[in-house]
Amino acid sequence: MQPRSRKVLLAVATVGVLCLCGCAGDQFVLEHPLPFVVDDRIVGSWAEQDGKLSEVIRRGDGQSYVALSSDDVVKNGKGSVFYLARAGDALFAEGEQSCDQFYFHPPATDKTCWFIVKLNLSGDSLAYQFFDTRLIVRASLAGQIKDVSLMYGVSAEKGTNSNFSADVLIEGMPSEVAPFLAKYAAGAVYGATVVQMHRI
Image (cartoon, rainbow, N blue to C red):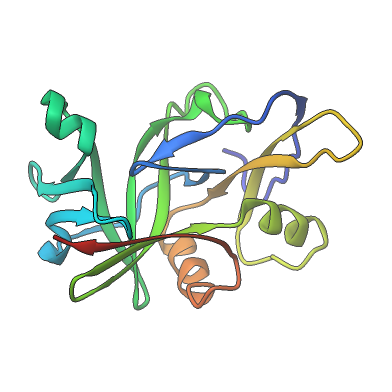
């Protein structure tokens, strides 16, 4: 990918959602993954506030983990493979996804992107915290984010009260990206979407 490029790609479409660790939202992804770490505190069965099983997380091959939804458990599904990574003191889940399913359009040679979600893991509590991609797009267009090079893809809804959905790709190597993630880990680029779970 070209360094320091900024591209805003507009397409009129119905806002779609992608699943990430069983949760929906606009996508914030990396060009290259952060170095993997192992933290087996995440292994176990997790439920949301209603007490019903939400997902089971197991160790996978090597440094990977596998998240199985309640349907995967019942139907013997394969689940989704992900890895853990750190930037500063913040813990993240990251995993491979095909670049062609996002609104941005990287060069054809780049087939794999890496989704990333912040994790808050403490004792018997696990929370997924999602980046606010619309906030990031607005801040970057206003020149407020200069730490990294970003590529955007935006889908606008039609209508007088229309909103937009955005996918954001952080370009660069892990050594460039990790300081950005650590700097904003306190919450400046996160939205209100927090999925809180407890161990069962």
